[in-house]
Each structure stands twice: as structure tokens, then as C-alpha cells.
Image (cartoon, rainbow, N blue to C red):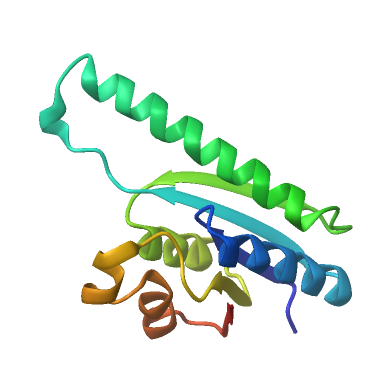
Length: 139
């Protein structure tokens, strides 16, 4: 039933708990696990060398977040695939979910969104609203 589970992480405590929960489910259900980190798009108007520096900084932070999530997840017998993407987090997670045809998405109930997420709606709510598969929120 659940052969592919995707977890979206942003470095928050809830996201790390979501990674652990997703990995526990993957182990229990003998599923593959996909771990996705997305960072906000970088404006083109920054120009050189600022654009390159910003890309490097965001990729470095994304890799750090990914490593923390993998440590929280531990070993998954069916395997773990990772993706680091530039784009709005909810849209990136939904795109990977569609492309990989996942059976479940796991995300933290609250992430790093801060005030903007309170005013505009959190990434998890966007995922719930548009996902084509079940979504598990982890608090």
C-alpha cells in the first residue's frame, strides 16, 4: 500500500521528527524513503558575485539540513533517495511526490516559516491542500 514515502525537511525540530517518523514507517512497511530539502528561489537581480555566494550559502545550508534529516532517519532497508531543490518548499515537495509517484508525504506541522507562514498559510497546509496522496503531519 505504501511503497514510497516522501519526507520534506527544513531543519526545524518538527521536520527532524517527521524524518524519524517517515523512516520508522518506511522500515515497518518495507518502503523506500525520499528525503527532500527545498530552498527559496534566489532572485536574479542579485548579480555577480552575490548570486554565486548566495547559491553556495543556500546549498551548504540545504546539505546540512539533509545530513541532519538522514541522521534522524537512520538506516532504511529499501533505501533512501535525496533531493535538494531550489523552489518554494511546498511546490517542490509536491512536484517530487508527483514525479516519484509516492504513496505518502510526511512533513512537520510547523517549520521555519516564521511570521510569513502565519499570515500566508504554512507550507504543510499547502501540501495538504494539493497533494494527490495521504499526508501525515508530525508535531
